[in-house]
Length: 156
Image 1 (cartoon, rainbow, N blue to C red):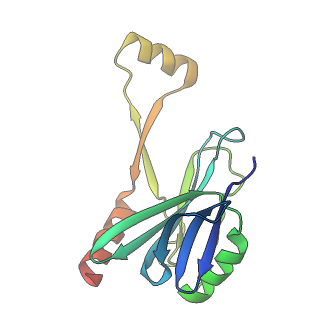
Image 2 (image 1 turned 60 degrees about the horizontal axis):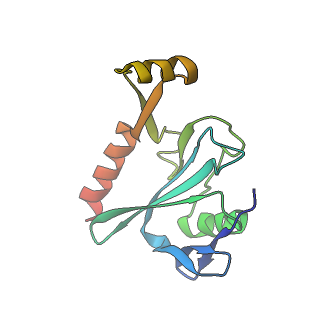
Image 3 (image 1 turned 45 degrees about the vertical axis):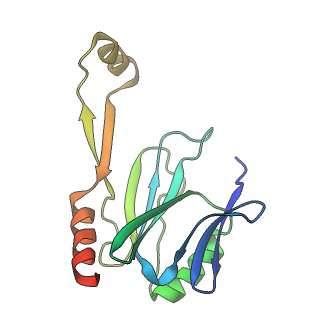
């Protein structure tokens, strides 16, 4: 799959841009409080590897997500320097739903999402479950939610 978007670091800003250079989102690097990676089971026909950068700006949390972008290695090197520690990415190449916190080091390796099976209630849902497997809902894990709430309290 051809990537049409790129991640780039410009001075104190992280940007996710279209191939023509038009920004999709940007964020101040100094405001990053969490870096997450996750995969889905939708590849290779759809994007299946994603990064999420959680920032704390003016007392609010912002979640900026991008699929596997061009320029990641260069940007990762810059972020590691600016944030002062490694940001190990370990899920590239996974073919199933997985998630993990990559940074900060104190949170590294924790699951970002938790999954809950949605009960099949109707006949159609029961048939779908039998043929395709259970439907899952996902949400930010309690560990990560607690970390984010603590960051809101201590940095606001």
